[in-house]
Image (cartoon, rainbow, N blue to C red; front, side, top):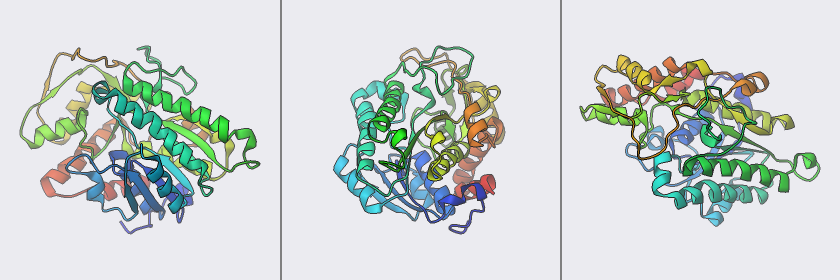
Length: 359
C-alpha cells in the first residue's frame, strides 16, 4: 500500500501529525504504527527490543523513528519524547501477560505502574503534546464472574498481579490528570487531554507471545504438533487488533479536536453476544487452516483465571461513533489467514488487511 494513501476520512486528522507510540515494537504497537504510516502520520516509538522471533515489528519495515529503551529509564524516555515533539502520544508499553505476572510481580508493577508514571511525568515537560491515550486492558475490572458486561464506571480491581497493575495505572492516570492537567484548567493553564482505553483478548497476525491461544496454535501447527488447549470453556470477548486500534485512533482524534467530553475511560470490545469459548475459537481456526490439530485438556488449577469476562461497548458506540467492524468469526478467520500466508507463502498480510479494513 502506498505510504500515506489510506483513504479514510474519519482518521484523516492524523495526516502530517507527529505521533509518539510507546511499545511500538510489540504486537499492537507495530500494527498501530503501520496504520499511522498509511494515514500519513510521522511516527516515533520507544520500546524494548522485540522479544519474539519472528517479530511483527521487524516484518513491517516501519519508516518512523525508533528508540530502543526501557520504560523504566525515565531520562531516556523523556529525552526521546521531548526531541520528537509529538502532537499525540499513545502509551502501549507494558508487561502484558497474566501468567508472567505471577512469576515476576515486581517487574510487572515496575513496567505497568512506574513505567506509566514515567510517561506521564515526561508529558509535563513536552509542550507540543495535546492528547494522550493510555492503553490498559479489559482485566482492570473487579471480576465478579457474572454474565453482565462491565461498564466504564464499574469497580476496578484485579485478582492477579497483571490485572491489578493495570487497574493501578488507570487510577494513576486519573489522579495525575486531576493533579496536573485538571479539566477545569483546560485551555487556561494547560492544553492536554487524557483518556484511557480498555480492550482485551485482542487477536491478529504477527503475535508470537507465549501463553496466548493463537500463537500457541500456530507454533504447534508449524511444528506439526497437536495444540493442547487449557480452559476450553473460558469465555472471552475476542476482537481483531484492527477493531481495537480503530477505537484508539478515533478516541485520539476526538482529543486532538479539543473535545473535552472524550477525556476519561473507554471500553472497546465486540458485542457481548459475540463472545465465544476457547473451544469454539479453536474449531473456527481449524476450519481456516486444516493443518491445525487440537486436543482439549482439563482446566489448569495452578493460577486463577477468570471464566467469564465481557465488556459493555455502549459508550464507545453511542458517543464516539466506534463500532466493531469484524465480528468474532471474521476476526478469527483473518488472524489464521495471516499466519497461514506467512508460513506457507512467506507473505505478510498486514498492509493488505489494513487496506481491507479501513478503505
